[in-house]
Length: 378
Image (cartoon, rainbow, N blue to C red):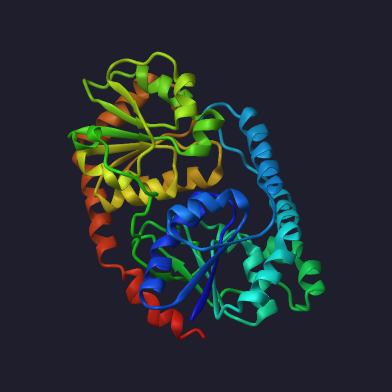
């Protein structure tokens, strides 16, 4: 079987699909990722073969738009775009890459396409090639459900141009890495798949062998777009001698300023290499971070940043009792943040909730166990 992976140019959308790609290759199937140039280094570090679509300029334009949005928000504030705004951006992106996708698809002739929920070009390509497409969620979200109507309307003329008069094809299946209870009840029905943590590649550094620290994960994009303000709040909070471990890109180190000795900034390192030595995780609302922490049974303090998807993740972590979620207006209060972290570290509820999620995740079918389901779609 030949499987084409497809992802928008956001590493956190690609990484959840890497364990499935590994399972496919281990079973003897061929896997190719279609992606924009900026995602190629992340794909190659995961051992994936790539076919480039689109251009670097498309991603540069997207990052500039997000930077403008972030500057308009207070730290912790949430950007709330309209469906019309989102649909127009999806249309612009699909129009910019769809011809390249079709060229790659007709050359490589996949039997199956696996795509992240926002890579609508993959659904168009599946219709053109007459092959099934499977959507792979990144975590707790309703986007793959709520976006169907706006996306179909925005992409109708592109579909018609490519010989799809019925519009955007529906996925043959939706794979969901959320354990029972974590996903939003309003999300469309899906097939469960176990979350297998893949946070990138690297070596275990010496500092990773310590114990009883708190990991502070700001995410690459949120950290660059204002998330560093959270470090200032954490530095002023009364944390009772807790050491905070902050993996941060080297280029951002100089922007942090002076921090107390209890806040240790280290080089970026895959979370699953050092979370065994942590007692809790403080993070920006990234689904990959949340699911990795839950896989380790760790309670969380979620401080969602400007993207609505990050706020949604925080809501669900709190809803299943695995942590505390602080809304925008509470994120700049050092005393409040310190108290929330105290609850996460010392109250029994969040740790018990995280343990329940860890056990539920272990009951989900692995990517390898799901392969017969995918093969049956052909």
